[in-house]
Length: 108
Image 1: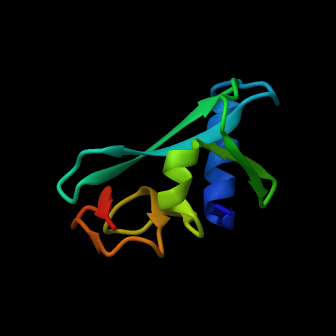
Image 2: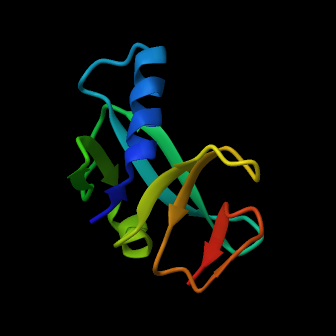
Image 3: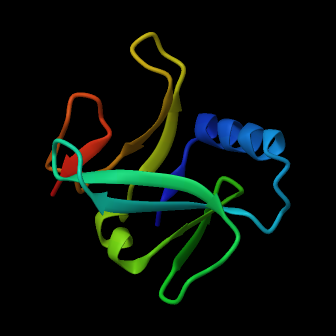
């Protein structure tokens, strides 16, 4: 399962409205190689499912990830910060053994 916080849900809803996306669009999250810790998160809206996609719904947000990324993201919570130290989405990933200072990359 991939979880979505209340703040992340609010921001995702606002972004969907601003982009005038229809209901068939969902949030696609993934993991790719790169970043200072070895792996980086990806996030975008999509409306096409792929073979082996893992599909979840939490807090009324449909989240889709590929099977390989899911192995790294299982149990992760997508959150949003409005704080002074940075504004934006971030992942609270219990599988990460190390993260970089900016929080955009991790390793397991």
